[in-house]
Image (cartoon, rainbow, N blue to C red; front, side, top):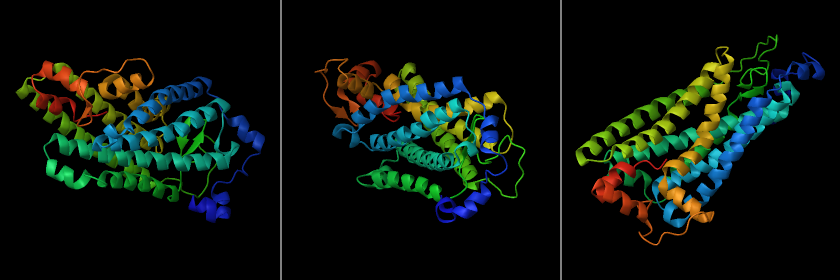
Length: 348
């Protein structure tokens, strides 16, 4: 954005649309109705679930929990991301746009798409660190790093990290020829320039977050499985924990690595479509996970929407979890401490 705002003449030279007429640029585009309408529909459904979840997480009894604080920030970033990778992406797919169809709009959208993605990765990193320390018994270090205002501080750091990426060029740019976002504004065209369009920060960010998430969540899964065996925990709870952890880790890792691959190699059609789906899934998918697997959020969302009556038994939130959950699950596992070990460490 620095080049776009302060050195616009240089920007117009690097991203010149003088190679063809406007009609010729537009004629090269490929409308992708199925993919485009899917993108818009998925984001619409995801937001219908996600926004009530965020309203629930903002309540005092939830937001005072460190994990829910990070989840709330991450949810806000996810909602913003759906605007670009869902609605804007869908609109560009349906209209068959290429970069030179609307260069200013696509350039600005691509800039903020990468910025939001980096903020999301930063928040996922701190969420994983928080869960890892809590799972592996690092209570003192958890208190040092995340108690009080410190959680908000780490979330703000993640957002600032994303904002810094607004300044770092070049951004990713949409083209319907590839059906996705690429650094090269002339992807699919027989245009040769001396300019280099790769952003090395994409590689650093995507590879870094993939390695960190894989190591931390693998460690947490191993630790929880060992604890559940020794305490006689239910296999069902183990599977639920594994699915939630794997979802967080895999979608972010796959999205980051596939988009990195697409910048260097010409991917087949199914890889491009799959990358777009995983990108949307990494942003909108948590809403479905909250509703399907997180009974505390599920119950409160349904109550807020008037689908379930308020349960009078059980009291409030215990360590970020509903008292009713503690009562019913404790009977199944044998002790409240076992429940905290097995169910409480993953909130996603």
